Length: 114
Length: 113
Image (cartoon, rainbow over all chains, first blue to last red; front, side):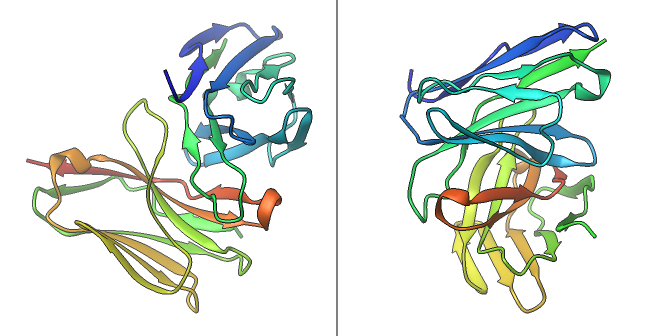
Protein backbone atom coordinates (compact mmCIF):
# COMPACT_ATOMS: atom_id res chain seq x y z
CA UNK A 1 0.00 0.00 0.00
CA UNK A 2 1.24 3.47 -0.85
CA UNK A 3 1.80 5.82 2.03
CA UNK A 4 3.74 6.25 5.21
CA UNK A 5 3.66 3.48 7.78
CA UNK A 6 4.79 3.55 11.38
CA UNK A 7 5.35 0.54 13.60
CA UNK A 8 4.55 -0.43 16.21
CA UNK A 9 1.36 1.54 16.88
CA UNK A 10 1.70 1.06 20.63
CA UNK A 11 4.76 0.22 22.72
CA UNK A 12 5.39 -0.09 26.43
CA UNK A 13 9.00 -0.27 27.53
CA UNK A 14 10.98 -0.01 30.73
CA UNK A 15 13.28 2.80 31.76
CA UNK A 16 16.79 2.25 30.47
CA UNK A 17 15.87 -0.04 27.61
CA UNK A 18 16.69 0.69 24.00
CA UNK A 19 13.69 0.92 21.70
CA UNK A 20 13.40 1.54 17.97
CA UNK A 21 10.42 3.06 16.21
CA UNK A 22 10.08 2.28 12.53
CA UNK A 23 8.95 4.52 9.67
CA UNK A 24 8.54 3.46 6.05
CA UNK A 25 7.32 5.51 3.08
CA UNK A 26 6.56 4.32 -0.43
CA UNK A 27 6.80 7.59 -2.38
CA UNK A 28 10.60 7.93 -2.43
CA UNK A 29 10.27 11.33 -0.78
CA UNK A 30 13.66 12.86 -0.09
CA UNK A 31 12.78 14.45 3.24
CA UNK A 32 11.69 12.60 6.33
CA UNK A 33 11.01 13.86 9.83
CA UNK A 34 10.36 12.64 13.34
CA UNK A 35 8.13 14.67 15.66
CA UNK A 36 6.87 14.03 19.15
CA UNK A 37 3.52 15.29 20.35
CA UNK A 38 2.88 16.12 23.99
CA UNK A 39 0.10 17.99 25.76
CA UNK A 40 1.03 21.62 26.12
CA UNK A 41 3.83 21.42 23.56
CA UNK A 42 2.21 20.45 20.32
CA UNK A 43 4.47 18.79 17.75
CA UNK A 44 8.20 19.23 18.23
CA UNK A 45 10.87 18.21 15.73
CA UNK A 46 13.30 15.53 16.91
CA UNK A 47 15.33 14.76 13.78
CA UNK A 48 15.05 15.18 10.07
CA UNK A 49 16.74 13.78 7.00
CA UNK A 50 17.23 15.37 3.59
CA UNK A 51 18.27 12.14 1.85
CA UNK A 52 19.79 8.75 2.55
CA UNK A 53 22.78 9.11 4.89
CA UNK A 54 22.00 12.80 5.58
CA UNK A 55 20.43 13.55 8.94
CA UNK A 56 20.29 16.53 11.27
CA UNK A 57 19.01 17.39 14.73
CA UNK A 58 15.78 19.15 15.51
CA UNK A 59 14.88 21.03 18.67
CA UNK A 60 14.50 18.01 21.02
CA UNK A 61 17.09 15.49 19.83
CA UNK A 62 18.81 14.59 23.13
CA UNK A 63 18.46 10.86 23.87
CA UNK A 64 17.46 9.95 20.32
CA UNK A 65 19.41 8.53 17.39
CA UNK A 66 18.35 8.14 13.77
CA UNK A 67 19.71 6.46 10.69
CA UNK A 68 18.74 6.49 7.06
CA UNK A 69 20.56 3.89 5.00
CA UNK A 70 17.66 3.65 2.52
CA UNK A 71 15.46 6.45 1.20
CA UNK A 72 12.25 4.73 2.27
CA UNK A 73 13.16 3.96 5.90
CA UNK A 74 13.87 6.32 8.78
CA UNK A 75 14.04 4.51 12.14
CA UNK A 76 14.19 6.41 15.42
CA UNK A 77 16.03 4.84 18.35
CA UNK A 78 15.76 5.79 21.99
CA UNK A 79 19.16 4.71 23.30
CA UNK A 80 18.13 4.45 26.96
CA UNK A 81 14.46 5.23 27.41
CA UNK A 82 13.37 7.67 30.13
CA UNK A 83 9.88 8.45 31.42
CA UNK A 84 10.11 11.92 29.87
CA UNK A 85 10.18 10.20 26.48
CA UNK A 86 6.65 8.91 26.98
CA UNK A 87 4.87 10.53 24.05
CA UNK A 88 3.21 10.03 20.70
CA UNK A 89 5.78 9.92 17.91
CA UNK A 90 4.95 10.90 14.35
CA UNK A 91 6.98 10.31 11.24
CA UNK A 92 6.44 12.56 8.21
CA UNK A 93 7.81 12.91 4.70
CA UNK A 94 7.74 15.41 1.87
CA UNK A 95 9.17 15.57 -1.64
CA UNK A 96 12.02 17.82 -2.72
CA UNK A 97 11.24 21.24 -4.08
CA UNK A 98 11.00 24.83 -2.98
CA UNK A 99 7.24 24.87 -2.63
CA UNK A 100 6.73 21.30 -1.45
CA UNK A 101 5.47 22.15 1.97
CA UNK A 102 2.96 19.30 1.91
CA UNK A 103 4.15 17.09 4.73
CA UNK A 104 2.41 13.72 5.00
CA UNK A 105 2.27 12.17 8.43
CA UNK A 106 2.02 8.60 9.58
CA UNK A 107 -0.57 7.48 12.14
CA UNK A 108 1.86 7.65 15.03
CA UNK A 109 3.44 5.38 17.64
CA UNK A 110 2.20 5.77 21.19
CA UNK A 111 5.18 5.03 23.46
CA UNK A 112 4.93 4.58 27.20
CA UNK A 113 8.09 4.32 29.30
CA UNK A 114 7.48 2.80 32.74
CA UNK B 1 8.57 34.05 24.06
CA UNK B 2 7.22 31.11 22.09
CA UNK B 3 7.47 31.35 18.33
CA UNK B 4 3.83 30.28 17.99
CA UNK B 5 0.92 30.77 20.38
CA UNK B 6 -2.31 28.86 19.94
CA UNK B 7 -5.14 28.58 22.45
CA UNK B 8 -5.45 24.85 23.21
CA UNK B 9 -9.15 25.12 24.03
CA UNK B 10 -11.07 22.90 24.27
CA UNK B 11 -13.68 24.62 22.14
CA UNK B 12 -17.22 23.24 21.95
CA UNK B 13 -19.87 24.70 19.63
CA UNK B 14 -23.26 23.61 18.27
CA UNK B 15 -23.59 22.21 14.76
CA UNK B 16 -23.99 24.94 12.16
CA UNK B 17 -22.02 27.53 14.11
CA UNK B 18 -19.15 29.54 12.65
CA UNK B 19 -15.87 28.56 14.26
CA UNK B 20 -12.84 30.82 14.52
CA UNK B 21 -9.42 29.37 15.34
CA UNK B 22 -6.40 31.61 15.78
CA UNK B 23 -2.64 31.65 16.13
CA UNK B 24 -0.10 34.36 16.70
CA UNK B 25 3.55 34.10 15.82
CA UNK B 26 6.69 36.08 16.52
CA UNK B 27 9.12 34.98 13.80
CA UNK B 28 9.07 37.30 10.79
CA UNK B 29 10.99 34.67 8.81
CA UNK B 30 7.95 32.40 8.57
CA UNK B 31 7.05 32.13 4.92
CA UNK B 32 4.14 29.76 4.53
CA UNK B 33 1.13 29.43 6.77
CA UNK B 34 -0.77 26.22 7.14
CA UNK B 35 -3.58 24.59 9.03
CA UNK B 36 -3.53 20.89 9.81
CA UNK B 37 -6.43 18.83 11.07
CA UNK B 38 -5.83 15.87 13.36
CA UNK B 39 -8.47 13.33 14.21
CA UNK B 40 -8.15 11.32 17.40
CA UNK B 41 -5.34 8.74 17.23
CA UNK B 42 -4.39 9.81 13.71
CA UNK B 43 -1.57 11.85 12.22
CA UNK B 44 -2.10 15.48 11.20
CA UNK B 45 -3.31 16.11 7.66
CA UNK B 46 -2.88 19.32 5.69
CA UNK B 47 -6.11 21.26 5.49
CA UNK B 48 -5.11 24.61 4.00
CA UNK B 49 -2.02 26.61 3.18
CA UNK B 50 -1.23 30.13 2.04
CA UNK B 51 1.84 32.33 1.70
CA UNK B 52 0.44 35.82 1.52
CA UNK B 53 -1.64 38.13 3.64
CA UNK B 54 -5.35 38.00 2.93
CA UNK B 55 -8.00 35.33 2.72
CA UNK B 56 -8.07 31.95 1.02
CA UNK B 57 -11.29 30.02 0.78
CA UNK B 58 -11.86 26.30 0.26
CA UNK B 59 -15.44 25.19 0.64
CA UNK B 60 -16.54 25.82 4.21
CA UNK B 61 -13.01 26.74 5.29
CA UNK B 62 -11.34 30.15 5.07
CA UNK B 63 -7.74 30.79 6.04
CA UNK B 64 -6.80 34.36 6.87
CA UNK B 65 -3.31 35.76 7.28
CA UNK B 66 -2.31 39.16 8.62
CA UNK B 67 1.47 39.39 8.34
CA UNK B 68 1.62 42.90 9.78
CA UNK B 69 0.00 41.67 13.01
CA UNK B 70 1.61 38.21 12.85
CA UNK B 71 -1.79 36.61 13.20
CA UNK B 72 -3.49 33.81 11.30
CA UNK B 73 -7.02 32.47 11.54
CA UNK B 74 -9.07 29.56 10.29
CA UNK B 75 -12.82 30.00 9.93
CA UNK B 76 -15.19 27.08 9.56
CA UNK B 77 -18.70 27.87 8.30
CA UNK B 78 -21.72 25.65 8.82
CA UNK B 79 -19.69 23.45 11.17
CA UNK B 80 -20.43 19.72 11.15
CA UNK B 81 -19.85 17.00 13.76
CA UNK B 82 -17.26 15.55 11.34
CA UNK B 83 -15.22 18.74 11.86
CA UNK B 84 -14.57 17.64 15.45
CA UNK B 85 -10.79 17.31 15.64
CA UNK B 86 -7.67 19.09 16.82
CA UNK B 87 -6.60 21.93 14.55
CA UNK B 88 -2.94 22.89 14.43
CA UNK B 89 -1.50 25.98 12.85
CA UNK B 90 1.89 25.47 11.26
CA UNK B 91 4.53 27.71 9.82
CA UNK B 92 7.31 26.98 7.39
CA UNK B 93 10.67 28.37 8.40
CA UNK B 94 13.82 28.44 6.30
CA UNK B 95 14.62 28.02 2.64
CA UNK B 96 14.57 25.07 0.27
CA UNK B 97 16.20 22.06 1.88
CA UNK B 98 16.41 23.64 5.29
CA UNK B 99 12.66 24.24 5.50
CA UNK B 100 11.09 23.04 8.71
CA UNK B 101 7.55 23.10 10.00
CA UNK B 102 6.87 24.75 13.34
CA UNK B 103 3.53 23.90 14.94
CA UNK B 104 1.21 25.53 17.39
CA UNK B 105 -0.11 23.51 20.35
CA UNK B 106 -3.35 22.68 18.59
CA UNK B 107 -6.95 23.59 19.49
CA UNK B 108 -9.31 20.74 20.28
CA UNK B 109 -12.68 21.43 18.65
CA UNK B 110 -15.95 19.59 19.27
CA UNK B 111 -19.07 20.22 17.17
CA UNK B 112 -22.19 19.11 19.03
CA UNK B 113 -25.13 17.76 16.95
